[in-house]
Image 1 (cartoon, one colour):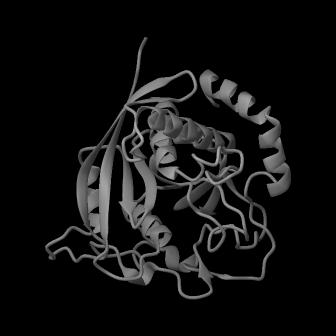
Image 2 (cartoon, rainbow, N blue to C red):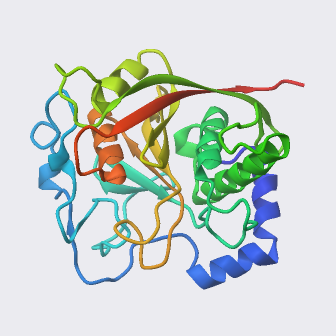
Length: 295
């Protein structure tokens, strides 16, 4: 269930003609559709963490081969009935779950000057994580996050023309948060544990001993991730920049969340999404502290 402040925000968004028109053109929330069969990057058999995902660092061998797509791609046809965990789709039993929105930061729903600034959406995602546990997340909430990220960006631009200078206060429609981003780790993708730079797996291991929510930045990508220790929690990863292949149907995109129970699988999802195909590429990890303001 959405908290009251989010419920009102959802009603406000869905009542606009522009939003309704967007859904009419794009068919609502992104679901698996019928396409020419493609091979997933990792088969169900290969998803055994004791075989494919091993070691103490990420591997370039995790990346999809040509004509392959990620296991969670909406380009893969749906076979059989779709299993659910609350509002999440079950991508792989007891391993991986996904949740899909219907709104993308590049949508014409947004002002052209603000369109596509997904960095602010990932900050809004971290604020939403403070308000609501993963089991309560819905497709509509993901759209709320994108809209809140757009408002946060425009509020930041009113106080500074520097797109990297974000406002300290983020409003999640009725709930104010003081947001602090701090660089906590950096390294290079596919670095070995014995190398001079930290790899992504090593950096996330370090991060989660101290913090809960974060943003990883690499080659222009900004992805949010975090961990909830409650009974229905786990690791989550949020992306709102994907468009078209390999995850979405042609000329479509939306925000989505992946949930998993193992840290190594979280790293796998991030690596596949970044799709960096050479070693030594820099990444940065920022902690996100979002404290609810009590008036």
